[in-house]
Structure formats: structure tokens, C-alpha cells
Image (cartoon, rainbow over all chains, first blue to last red; front, side, top):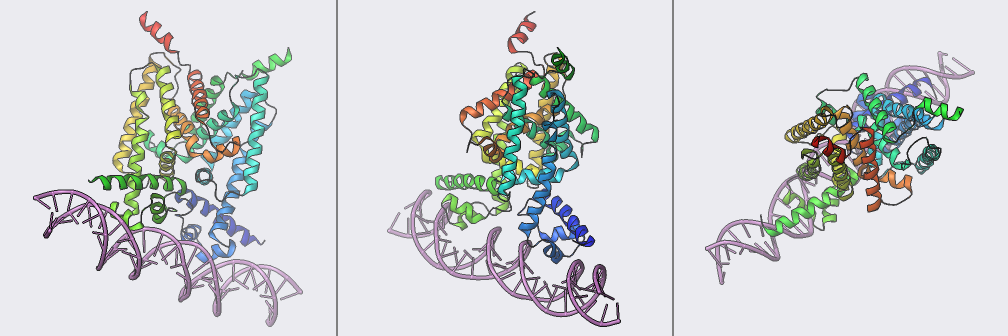
Length: 212
Length: 212
DNA sequence: TTAATACTTAACCCCGGAGTCAAAAAAAGG
DNA sequence: CCTTTTTTTGACTCCGGGGTTAAGTATTAA
């Protein structure tokens, strides 16, 4: 794949992400993506054979970002640290890649008609791993016996909301868009809510316990 | 407005809600709504002049339901009771009117292009009232000093997620759909998370305090 | 019973957006 | 250089879905 091809492909994916996020799949016109990428329409068809195909490429791109954010829950950190990092990672995705978040949400909301089976399987499996990790913490007495799945749903929803419902947040708060600090405050407050709400022992406490 | 007109209108609104929720505005075909309502296509245009107009009617319908759920925060109950009822009301909307929830979310996610200015204003004003109420509780020492707006965002997101992301929840949990009990568990756990996470004093405590 | 109004229906129009194509231009390769 | 491959471009086709029309059939009102 030549330099120019690679460059144009990423230009198009980027533009497509934005337009798909803004309008949704059906309302998106290829020509709008083309204009936004500064290329003539047939180029889109040259690099990606169809609208459907382009959309799938965008989805794959987006999924990678989402999956990246799951990493903090797969290390060996204590629950307080892991959950804090997890929430920050999730909020970070909403801040840094709002388009990706919206495309993903939109896709899921409409029953994931374009999501490859294989990706769904990976999602399920990864979620299971997260639930197991949380269950371990519960069994070890490091936090209250909550339902891990519902806890995840709450974290997912609360963190993605800052990208997906940015319009509502802007309207309600009166600010046209959230600052870096606003995102940090949001992540911090959600972390506190989760840690305190689930009775998670602070990190030092855990170390001490294990040392004894 | 005759009996038959009223009946058909509500048939159409109902069918339209479902299809709009399932597919989104642009991907929805009027003929699908017609079929789903058991009526010929031109009837849709007879009762609602255009797709846009029908969609706006659906939105108004939907907004009413959403606004209904805000009521618990406007009474004089103590925070523990009010928040519990609020969360249950929100979850109830997701369970009972999943289509409404999705239509609303989809609309907001794409920048609310069809939402009348007047409704946005009501939303803002009502949110402000909720924030004030929470701030009062904080000032009265009935809960931790959290940011009321972010708390609301968390509650909105976490409750709506059960309607909006039902596909993901079904996939992850392995159950094709959530039972009544599942919804109750979800509402209960979220309530606990919020109450404990925000250090809300239990209802009895509040009464005692005021009595002293 | 009749006139007016409300509702239904089949057949139609039309536009916009997905997708194509063939020829030109530019890059790469020898 | 000339040849081959990649990329660009404007001008096209085609069709699906929004919206219309005009003629019909029920309902209502008096």
C-alpha cells in the first residue's frame, strides 16, 4: 500500500467518522464525507468499495479505541487503582474520540446491524473477564458484593454520556463545550461515587491487609 | 377530532415510535410505519403531513414520558426517598417505553436537530430545578458536596442505558431480554450506589435530625 | 334521504444520493 | 525516456423512498 493511498485512506476514515457520528449511517451522504476529506466522491469508492464497506472500516477503527480503554481492568492493580484508571480511560475516550463513541453507541442502539459477529464475540468475552475480575475483588472482601455486570453498565453509560450526549450537557450546563478540567472533574466524581458506593477499600488499606 | 381519527393517529404514533427507535429517523421508511400500523401509506400523510411532522409528534409524545419521570425530585421528600423514587421512575421508563427512550437518545446524540426550542428550554429549566434541589440537600448536610449536574448525568445515563443499549446488555448477559426482576435489581443497585456513594443520610436519620 | 365531510386507496411523479465508467493525469519502475 | 500501474476526475445511470393526486367509500349531520 503506497504512501498516498495510506494517507488518503486515513483522511477518509477520519472524515467519515465525524460525519457518521454527526448524522448516523443512513443520513450520511458519501459526498459530504468526500467534501469533508477534500476529495472528489469517486475517490471514496476507489478506496472503499461501498458506503457499507467504508462504514465497517470506521467501526473497526472505533472498536479498537473502545477496547484499548478496557486494559486497566486486566492488570493486577488493587480495585481502587484499577477502577480509577478504568474510569479515567473511559472518560478519556469520550473526550479524545467523541466521534468514535457516537458511532459505536449509534450502532449498538440500533441493534448492531453492521457489527461483525467476531467483534461481538470479543466484546462478550472481554466483558466476562472484567466481571470475573470484579467478582474476585468481592470474594477477597475488597469491595461490597455488587452485581459486576450492572456495575459495568453504569460505568460504561456514565462515561460515554459525555461524548454521546454532549449536546444535552452543553445545553444544560450553558457551556458550549466541556474543558479538560470539566472532564477531569467528571471522571473524579464518578470514581468517588463508584469507589465509595461499592465500598472499595483504598489502595493503602489493601497493601496493609496483604502485608499482614 | 373524531373517534376514528384519534384511534388511527395513536396507532401511527405507536408504530412510528417503534420504527424510528429501531432504525433512526433517516433509515425509517414511511411505508414500514404504515405496514406496521396496518394502514396504507397515504394515510400516514393524511394524518401527519410529512415524515418530519410525524417525527415531531413522536418526539413530543416521548418528551412527555421523560418529563413525567422527573417528578420525584420536585416533591418535599428527603433525599434518600426522592433519589430512590427518581431512579426507579427513570428505570421504569426504560422498561416500559424503550422505544421512547431510544428515539430521545438518538435525537439528542445527533444534536437535537428536530427538537423544538421550547422543549429544550423546558429541559434546561427543569434540570436547573433538580440541581437546586440537590444543592439544598448538600447545604443542609444531608449528603456529600457532589456536583449536582454530574450526578444527574450519571443517573440519566445509567438508567437510560437499559433501554438504549439493550442489544449490548442482552449480548453480554446472554439473556435475550431483561425480566421485571432484572430491572428491579438494576434500579436497586444503582440506588444503593448513588445513596452510599454520595453519603446520603437514610430517611429515618433525616427525620430524627429535624425533630431534634 | 341527502348533502357535506371525513377517510381510504391505487396509481402516479420526482428528486437525490448510491454507485459506475472511461478517459485523463500522475507516479512508479525499468 | 517510455511503459505500466496507481490515482483523479466529470459525467453519467438507476432506483428507492418521500410526497401527491384524484377518484372512490364510509360517516356524520340535518
